[in-house]
Structure formats: C-alpha cells, structure tokens
Image 1: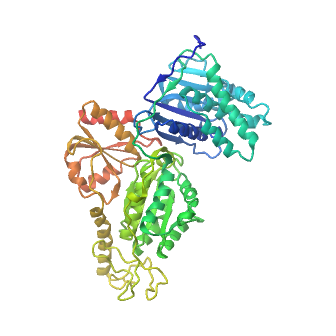
Image 2: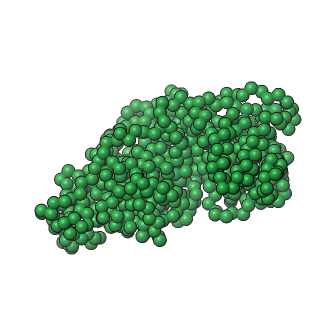
Image 3: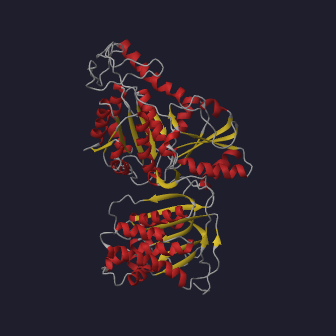
Amino acid sequence: MEGSSVLTPPRQELESAVVRFAGDSGDGMQLTGSQFTLATALAGNDLATFPDFPAEIRAPVGTTYGVSAFQINFGARTIRTAGDALDVLVAMNPAALKVNRADVKPGALIIVDSGAFNAKNFAKAHYEADPLADGSLDAYRVLKVDMSSATEKAVEGHGLSKKEALRCKNMWALGLIYWMFGRDRQPTVDWLETKFGKTPELANANIAALNAGHAYGETAELPTGVRTYSVPAAKLPAGLYRNVTGTEALAWGLVAGCELAGLPMTFCSYPITPASQLLHSLAALKSYGVTTFQAEDEIAAACAAIGASYAGSLGVTSSSGPGIALKTEALGLAISVELPLVVVNSQRGGPSTGLPTKTEQSDLFQAVWGRNGDAPLAVLASRSPHDCFEVAIEAVRLATKYMTPVILLTDGYLANAAEPWRIPSFADYAPFPVSFREDPEGFQPFLRDPETLARVWARPGTPGLMHRIGGIEKDYDSGNISYDPANHQRMTDTRADKIAGIARDIPAQTVEQGSEGGRLAVVGWGSTYGPISRAVANLRNAGQDVSHVHLRHIWPLPVNLGELLAGYDKVLVPEMNHGQLVKLLRAEFLLPAQGLSKVSGKPFKIVELETAIRAALEG
C-alpha cells in the first residue's frame, strides 16, 4: 500500500467499534478475544461478545472447517449485541479471511498475517489466487504484517522451539490491537504470569510477543488510513461490575435460588456442547452446598437429579437438544411423581448432531410439548448473559413452589457470550423457603396445597412419613397405584391445572419499548432480545410506530399476553428456528402473527430486523 506516513495522526474518537479475531482453532483466538474483552471492560466500555467455535474437534490446520473466531462490540453507549458488520478483522490465515470477509464493512480494516499467506494455505482455503494481490480486497483497508516472523524474532532468547514460538503469535496480534485502541497491557501481563506461573519461560515469551506487537504499532510506518482510535468509557449506572458469561451467571443464579429456597443443590449432568461448561462452573462452588455428579449418560443424569429431589435436595440437570431428548422419559417420571427439578437446555443447531457449536432456538416445541402423554411443565427463557442469573432464580422458585420440573432455555450464544454485569445485592431478593412435611397425621404423598395444587414434599427417613412414588398412575386421595379411568382423568386435569395456575404467579407481560397498542409489535424470546431491542430503538428514533415485547415465561404464558398483543395491528415474531413461538401464539390467541425465521447458526443482525420491520409496517 502506498502513501505511508511517519507521523501517527491523533486518535479518532468512536462511539462504538466491532472487532473480530479469526484463525485456526489452535491459534488461541478465544483466549485473545477474552483478554481484549477484559482490557475493554477495565477501560469502562459497555460490551458484548460472540465466541464462534468450529464444530470439528480437530479439523485440518488451515482449512475453513477449523476457523475459530471471537467478536466483540464495545462502545461509549449501551451495547445490546455483538455487532453486525466488522470495523476490524484480524485474520491469521487465508481460511480465516475467506470465512469472515463477508462480515467486514466496506472501507473497514483487515489485518492479516502475511507470513501465513502462501500457496499451501491458499490451496487449503480453496483460493485460486492470492487474495492480497488479486484485487478482491480493494474495498477494504488492508494491513499486511508478517506476524509469524515478527513473533519468532520477539521471543528469541526465551528457549522456545519454533512451534512454541509461533503459539505466541496471538499475543503479538493482541499487542497491535491494544495499541490501535489504546488499551492497557498490564492486566494481560498479570494474567500471563499467573497462567504460566510454573513455566516462566512461556510467560516471558508471550509477554515479549505482546509488547512487540504494541511496539510495532508505535514505531512502524503504517499505511495511510491505518490509524488509532479512542472509544470513551460508557456512562453506566454506578455499582460494582464484572464481566460475566451466560454460563457463569446461570451457575450463580442456581446457587442463589437454592440459597433463597434453603436447599442444597445436586447437579447431575453429562458433557455435551454447549452445556458442558455449566458442570465445570458449578463444580467450583462446593462451598455453597453444591454437589456435582458427572453421570455415565444423559438418562442417568436426569434420573439421578430426580433421586436427589426425592431425597430433599434440589435436583438440577442440563444438556442441549439431543441430550434433552434422551432425558424425556425421565422428565415424564418427574412430572408423574411431582418433584421439583430444574432442567437447563443450552440450545444448539439441529436436528440430530446438527451444528454442535452454533446457536439456535429450535427446542421450544420440545420444551413445551415434547413428552409422551399429557405431561405439562413450566418453561422459561433467558434473554442475555446476565439475565441467566435472574431466570435461574425464577426457575428454582417455580420448581419448588409448584413441585414441578422447570425447563430453562438458553442457547449456545448466551452460554458463551460475555457482557458487563452490575453485581446485585443479595439482600434485595426475597427468600422463598421450602417447607417439608413433618406431621404424620393424615399423611399421604399427594396431599395438595389448595392454591398451588402442589403436593407435599416429605424427605425419606422422616418418622411416620414412609411412602413410595413412581411412574404408574396413582390414586388422587391415597397415592396408591390406580388404573381407574375417572381417577386418571382427574389426575391428568390436576397436573394441567397446576401448571396453568403458575400464570397467576408470574408478572403480567410488559412492553420493553413503545406503547401498549399500535401498528406493530415485535415479539421475541431468548437471545433475540439484543438485536430486536436495538432495531426497534433505531426505528422508533426514526419516527416509526413499533413496539418490542419480550417473553421470559414461555409456558404458561402471562395471563395478559393475548389481550396485549390484540392491541396491535400486526405482530412480528423473529426467532432462530423455523417458526415455533409464532405457531404457539397463533394457537393460543388466534393471532395473525407473522414469523421471521433465521437458522444460519448465527444471531440476527440488527439490519436484518430493521428491514423486516419496515417491510411489515409498509405491507
């Protein structure tokens, strides 16, 4: 590129910026992104992240199948999504460039490791010519740096092999981006010294690479148009903040819910992407009364959690769609015996194995209706990483108050994404202590609370309260096995009425933005909250009559929801599936709701929703 300048122009102030790091799964892109996220949070910006993992465990190096990426949107304003188009793409090889180039804004900056752009890697990425030389990148500003060579030089003298030296390349790239956005390197230096405390040569080499990348930005004659930026701190409400992923917030919310209920927790799980990390997070919280159990399969995990609830703990289990399918018969058992159980479903692309590392919302039908027989339970959905904390508490409350399984829907995006979270005061949460049956007088295991229809909870070993429960239908009055047709009708009605009655115990549905009634309501659930919120805000600022309604309680639905939605001329339901909530709303309220489906494995972009909303308003 021509027109180099020795003088570095003053930093350009931006309201927000979107940066993506992309490379092979072994290039450390997730680690690089997480460190940039930490530095950005410490700088006071609001932010949202989107880690994007390859599905293949060991895809061939240099191929498009093995590309891993980490995206962060940060700014001086409220950030609700990980961003649409990229302002900066750091591509560590040709495959990373090929997979991610379409997301880069025209005129935006692409930084490439030119040392990895060779004939061998072009072939792996299915490039017929060098993309750095064939004119295909003329719409962008391109900074070509031989990061591989620069990293090897930076770590000379630290006793590393060439292979080990090249593993520091991500820190070199991070140092350059730190310089470009004025980020402090010290938190990353501290982290490296801690991570490699037992191998100081690796710590020192990575720190050297980090500093070398930063120094390159300071001293090199960079091409015209490549400059530095300043993103001021966001004006967030006062309080103590920390970065949190959806998985972390979910783990802490489950612990908080059990504390409010006065119960120990027994978490039983089997590893599956993207739900596995919840087991890891809860295993570190033993001091809060958490017992974790990695079962031999999904069925065993669900049954063990039911057994824990029978014994007087709160049983919790988690999985994603394929694992929830395996747990289905056990869920029917929990509904039949009427024990509290929290089931976390971190949704991923399907069907079958589908897209294990990509996000989707396609398990709503499975959660609401996916069991044999009439087997109702409660279903909740979290909307953001930090909202997982609140929804987990609500799941525990409903499960214990109504003696029912509760499915909590999150997804791969929420599980892995991070955002700043203002840590709440635990004193602000009202306890909902569980009451166990102690009195043997007149006891039978299916005595019910007349208001909630929840049966009594008696711990095994309580004097005079010996009882048995099981999956065969039981008599309403005695709890004994019953095949009486009229009794089965009564028990089926009672189980349905109990879940339906939860609608009286949840908040009335509110409008997130806009008015109660008008031309168009955009109704969402789960992780579509961020892009819907931003799209609606943008269009309302442009004078459009559009409102945003977002559901937390999926089943039962809030009692006022039908009346609320009937006040709008049109209802648009965007979801990352082939149209599940929209069918549920049509069935329940006979609404002529319109669906907007996206099943690409990636979240909605704001511009996609703005286009659909305008079309609905004009149509």
